Length: 117
Image 1 (cartoon, rainbow, N blue to C red):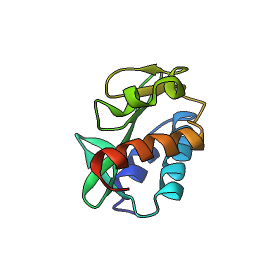
Image 2 (cartoon, one colour):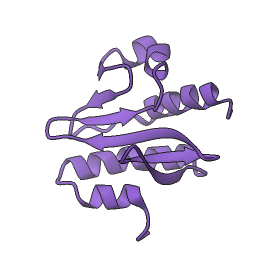
Image 3 (cartoon, rainbow, N blue to C red):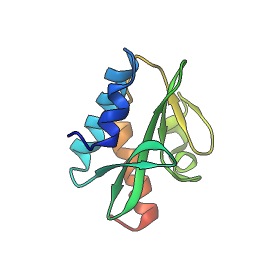
């Protein structure tokens, strides 16, 4: 996968961020095998039918899941209450991937928003 921008991004990360984000990437691809790795706003992301459905980033102190929506995280309410969120990012620890069930809910909310369900 030499031209996979998500893998290239992961390869450049230190541990434990690399393994943690790889687990979230794997969950996204297991839940949506049709998702295509891409870049969006310079960050690794996944698109379905040409529309970005999720993104991932790493910083020194945390990792972020980016739903590429200002309303997805708000719509999940209590399901994301245990995480630090902003309008467009859900932050999680460097060494604790998001549960697959939460990734599924995040993807479902975004796909509904895009009318791709």
